[in-house]
Image (tube, rainbow, N blue to C red; front, side, top):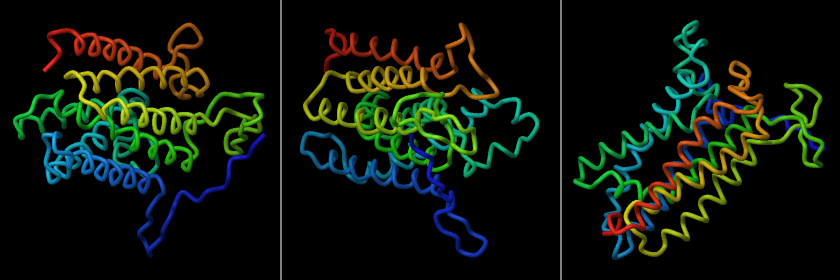
Length: 262
């Protein structure tokens, strides 16, 4: 049995300015995405310029932050927002939805594609392999913030979160950091290292993220304000992830058909 380490959520204090680990994890994720994107853009056959990666990251960062926070409010905490509208802006307290962030990034990628005269999937196929690094960093931020803990377990790596109760629980945010971060990154990086049909890389991202998130939802404690949505096991994460799996399969089938190839 493990015990959750007592981590100060504030990494650096400079007078009245407090820099939180949660925000630093997002910054680390964005820097890693920029670096990996620049590496890929330097390949002779990439069709991208290094300077375009910085612009793409700017669009993506806005999509992540705005979409992630708005999605969290709409999908998970709308009643609290009605009582306290300013909670929408208190991002340092945690509360970001991946699925909301994904929708925000979709809008950002579409806008960037219009600007650079690329199709939506040309942009997402390029961007998808780098995203898991940011996702993994974000999940580490969740762990430091002490949020998104798992359900009770008797497994030897069960972790006691003293601010919750005395029961050992799944450290589900670390599971997600491993699966949605490291494992998904390795899959997509290796898969995209060779030319693939149009939409295939995007389809692989949607499929595997959806599968990983759907699986972790079985050991992650459902949000207290929502509980189980149906059948005493279906969570909001299940409902939002299942369409991703179906859409990922659809994109892969389309990619490997004659219509999907370029």
